[in-house]
Structures are given as C-alpha cells and as structure tokens.
Image 1 (cartoon, helix red, strand yellow):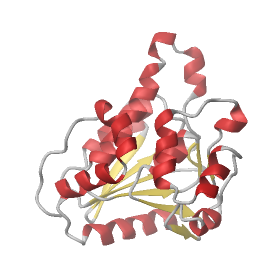
Image 2 (cartoon, helix red, strand yellow):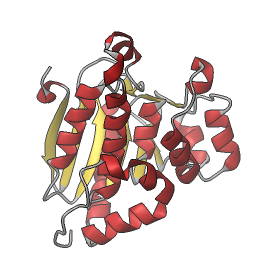
Image 3 (tube, one colour):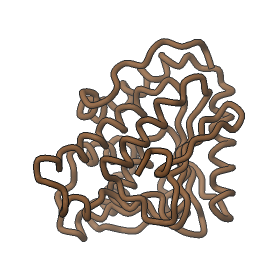
Length: 238
C-alpha cells in the first residue's frame, strides 16, 4: 500500500493537515509510520501542523498482527520508526496539534501526547495506555513522554498502572488534553485547525520553537533524537 493510501495531506490556510485515512483502527506499523513521517516532512512552509484520523480510532497503537507475521529481525523497525516520528515532531519548526478524533490507545496515546496541544472529541473516544492490561512492558520513551506531558502524578498512575480509559472530559479536567470538543470528527478537526491557526499567528521563530520544545522535554528528546531526520533547517518567522 502506498503512502497516499494511508494518510492524506491538505493545506487549510496556514495549517498543514495530515489525516490518517480509512475506517480501521490505524495500527502503527512501518508502512504507516513511514507515510506519516513523509507527511510531516512535507509541512515546509506551513505555519502549524495538525494530525487527525478518520473513523472510530485516532490510533489503536502498535500493529501486533504485523509483529506476529514479520520476520523477527524486522521487529525493531516499528519501534525505530515510531521514535523517528516523535523526533520529527519534536524537531519541527512549527506548532503541532493532535486532533484526537477517536480512541487513542498505547502508542496511539503516546503519539497524541507528542504534540504541543491536544484537542479531543468529547462524545467518543478515550486515552488508554493498555500495556498493564495487555501484559506488555511499557516502552521506555512512552514512560518518559507521559512523565513529562501528564502533570499530575495520580493521573500518570491511573493511565499506566491502572489502565484507566480516560474520556475527553476527564482528560481535560486532569490537564492531559487542552480541549474536549462536542460533535463529530469534522468538528474536532475544525477546532484543532483553529487552535493551530491561533498558534501560527503568534509569529514565533520556528527554529527557536523547536529548540525550546527539545529543552522542555529533554528525556523524551534524548531517547528519540538519534532516530529522527536531524536538526530542522532554519526558516523565517511564522
């Protein structure tokens, strides 16, 4: 399957909108991760980036079916591809917003939290770190991402040690997401694009923004930086 069949890219004003396409659960495997990295790299010239998804799921995490059928020597490509995507997002010289249009579980939850802001659908979907229920060890940089992005210790405990499925209202109350939006997928995407436009309008220096982001979440950056595309090129003010 080609990258264009896995995600779509469009420009809405100054916003580079990436949408994971299809009605499935958008499991993260090497093909989808490569498509997302290409879509992120294509954001040059935009003022901000939004990542959204079609259907019931934002992303249901790593593609365990792929792991069961792929040769063992290829298994590391999925972990490496996801680290690279997170590194790309952290090094991107524009603000980033996740439009969590449906369920975001495990690596899908981590992907949402890797953005600067998170806008979540209020009527459907939850954030869910499923590792404790699935009997899987949590990936090291997932733990760092949650430690650095979830401000409350009790909320971190409930996510990773209790496997709570947090609705948008609960996640907003606990400071994990920035907004819970009523309505359907289109409403969530519109709200995320509006937030991205608002951030783009601040006119920040993109290179400085990327460096501040890395410094704000240094342990996450330290665990992913060797996998990404490298330092972002200098660019004019947004």
